[in-house]
Image 1 (cartoon, rainbow, N blue to C red):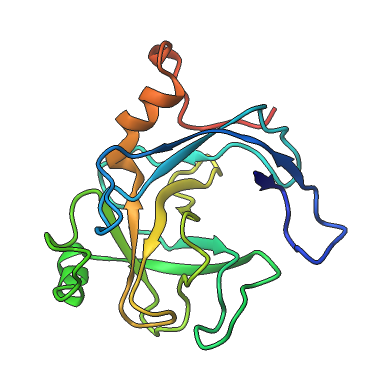
Image 2 (cartoon, rainbow, N blue to C red):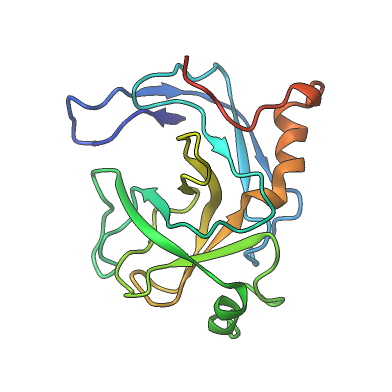
Length: 201
């Protein structure tokens, strides 16, 4: 089941949530649980999502060039790694892209990254080591206003990190490198009409 449009799980006038049944889970065929490469999955729902003030399709970042702007993370994960439980409210924080070389140097001992940080990954973090994703945030978006059209675009998907609130950046699955795979599932017979962005009418 997927719940869409909720901002506060304890109840709020701003909630506009609907539950949707999952039909198929498409895990990337090269993903292995023992590694952190190709950490991406798509869910096909039984019924289409109804757009609302809190729910509308996301735009995808389609440029090979990594964005230079600040990006946003959102999620329901832990706010304190030493305590049980996750956030009751959808949280947002701002991060900076970290160059691959710098990020790689911080993960040289990671057994889940035997080949280092690859093209299919992107790193982002807070230079002050305060803002970060944490347990419970995996699968959430790393997104930003990467163009002048006013649309947020998904640059990455939260994969993993080294602790929470650390100066070590988090690692995200880089959407651009998986566009072909996404297209093959979302537009299998109509690739000429594919859409990477949704415009509210």
